[in-house]
Amino acid sequence: MKTGKVLVLSVLVIISINLSAQETPSRHAVPGQRYLKEYWNQSELYLQHQAYQMLDLVDKALVANPPAKEINSERRMAMLLLDAVTHEPAPIDNPAVKEYLVTRMNRVMEDLDKPLKGRKSLRIYKLYNCGMLFRTKDLTVAVDLNGREGKLIPDEIMRKIVGHIDILFYTHNHSDHIDAHARDFCHKAGVPIYATDEIFKNDLMVNHIRKDDLYTFAVDLPKGSLTVNVLPGHQDDVQNDIWIVTLPNGKVVGATGDQWRDERKDLEWLKDIHKRLPRIDALAMDCWIHDYDEHVADFNPRLIISQHENEIGAHGIDHRESYWMTMFKQEKVHQSQVPYVLMTWGEWYDY
View (spheres, one colour):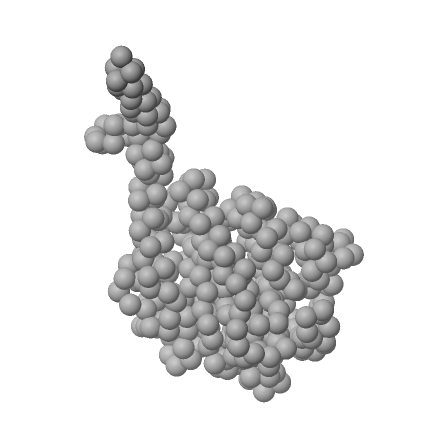
């Protein structure tokens, strides 16, 4: 009798498990998972499930092939898969893309939780778009921290990222670079923000810096002191501060933001600007920057960190510069011999 009861209970458990599996939709396919007809008249769902498949593979390939000056075939193919997903009509609304970003940002958080060894160490993280972290053993500098105000990088993760930084610099007043939520988290955590006059201009807690020429100042932080050089650049007519920062361990890092001005106006005073600056170790510079070779020669960095690829929040398909295009220009168009590192979202590189 007991054996019969056990058998009946076992059968009920199996049926219950099977029913639960049928009721829970797969993140990779509609129930059935066999025929294309299950996606008829559901093209968005088709692209979502396709993106899950592609991004799972991308994540594995990028972990196995981390950023380097030389890009191998596996890493190149992973980047092209990312290009394909981010050049769909509405990737910012694709749950697969959002989940992928969360996965990548959590991986950054796991690394930030670990101590960084070596007095001269410099680890460079690329978050979303031009969001960069420059981390030493002592402190971490952030530039253009942006998560689309919670739409792409959830506020919970952005709050944790802010908890690991010591200072934030914003380059210019465009929504793919600044983030009011990140700003608020910095205020609550006591993290100072430096920006142009146009960024959060009514916020008295933001340090607004905009001069007519190269301006140098010091920032004393609890974990160390920085020497900051700021240059009054532009994107068209929008103020674009170019930040060059000397870290406590002597490493010099910088970010040009979206530096570009028609008629080459800024190139006149940027000519050989490196002669007025400390030697830059790593410079974050836009992939689409005009007059690339001239800008590299003017700043004369030891390493370029490419940024702004596949910005999906504000730009249409024809304005989302792809990884393949960056690689093509670096290999076939640009003449500069300065090495560059191409990172995707949620990766880091040790200089």
